[in-house]
Image (cartoon, rainbow, N blue to C red):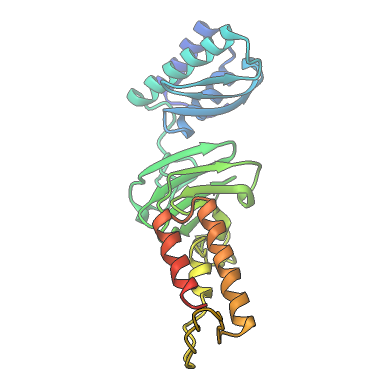
Length: 260
């Protein structure tokens, strides 16, 4: 059983008696709520029906989705735990920067804009930095110019860890690594708009014969014309995906058409 403070043990005893759950189950749920910053929890507790999620003031999900009594129990329990965490030191304080601490990220990063946890993964978002803890292995990433609005994980491991930014949904593993367990990953994240910008053909320096009205003779080579048309199709795809605004799409389309 995890070590508790005297006050923490009293809270565990009280919640165990009130909700008719084992002390191990209560301690596990305290850890889940604590990992979620006191406002959310993801858990897999057999005494509470297996896997589930809780969000303060929001949704509560349990394995048996139509068991409203169980949902109510989980919601009340997690709210009680959240309140206790806000006013009581339940676990002995661990040094900052260690896995057991609420502030598990490197101390020089300061206070995060937001943080959370999912399964065995924790994350914290800072100015230009993202810290990720997977099974105790902490990696710090450079977020470049991404404005991160959320983190999600489909399956275990950082290969499926993604974040949402103004450029869409991006794999965390594509960000440059600043420090930590995955320092070998130095792949620079090219924001989705950039590759197209970098591949645009530069204006042709050779003189171009102006089209003759009525004959439509154009001196641009078939190869150049084909490349420009392909670029227009790429820009159209980005526009359709919502990555480019209408103005950005029309401006770039007009620029490319002017080269034909």
